[in-house]
Image 1: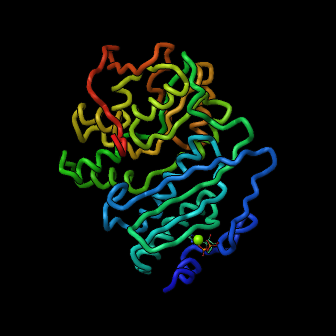
Image 2 (image 1 turned 60 degrees about the vertical axis):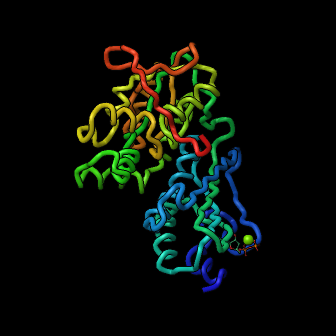
Length: 317
Ligand code: ADP
Ligand code: MG
C-alpha cells in the first residue's frame, strides 16, 4: 500500500459541509459570516503521550478528543481538522481501527477531516482543529474576575488513577481499574458545555496537565488569585471510595489527562451555569472562588489550609 492508496483508503471521504477536503493542495474552509476561526494543534508522540502498542481504535479517538477539548475551552464549534501522521509502516491492521476511532468521534461532532500529511517515521500524530466562534465571544483564560465562582465539569483524576495502577503505585479492583482506564483512553471533550457557557463564563481552560497547573495559567493571565476547596475537588474522583484521601487529592488536583473544563462565572450567573450544564448534559461542580490576592490557596472542608506539593505535568519541567 503506497502513500496515496493509504490516504485514499483510510482518510479521504466525500466533502461534507466544508467546500474542499482531502485531495487538493489546500483544503477550503467556510466559517459563517461574523464568525472568528478558532485554531488549535496537539501532537501525540509514542512513548510520551501513549505507550508503544496502544490500542489504535482508542488512540484515534483520543488524538482528536484532546484537540476538540481545546475548542470546547474557547466555546468554539468544531468545523474541520487536519492530520499529520508519521508511521513506521503502512499497516492495515493499525490504520483501519485508528481511522475508525478517529472518524467516529469526528462524525459525532460534525468535524470534517479536510487534509493532512503522511510520512514514514516514528509513530507521531499531530492534529490541527478549526472551529468557529462569534466574533468577540470566545472564552479566554484572561477573563476571570475577583469574586467569580470557580467550577469544574465532570470528574477529575480518573486518568491519573489508571496510570498509577498501571505503574504499580496503587492497586485497584478490576472494575475500578477498567472504568478509570476508559476515562484515560477515551476522554470526552466538553464541546456542548463550552458552547453553552458562551456569554455565561468569564474565563475557561481545559484541564490537560492537572487542575492546579492549568488553573495557574488562568490566574496569571487574569491577574487574580483563587481559593480552592481541596476536598470538594477530591470528591470529583469517579472511583472515590477506591483509594485514600491523599491519593484522591493527588489525582484530582494534579493528575492530568482529564480533558474537563475549569471555568469561572460571577455569583449572579449561578442559575445560568446550572442551565448550561443541564443543556449540555454535563455535571458541573463549584470548587472555589476567584480572589483579588494573587496565588492559589487550598483549603479543606473546615476552611483550614491544605499543604503539599501538587505539581502538574510539564514536558520540560
Ligand atoms: P502535497 O504534496 O500537496 O503536500 P500530499 O501528497 O501530501 O499533498 O497530500 C495529498 C492530499 O492528501 C492533500 O490534500 C493532503 O491534505 C491529503 N492528506 C495527506 N495525508 C493525509 C492524512 N493523513 N489525512 C488526511 N488527508 C491527508
Ligand atoms: Mg504533503
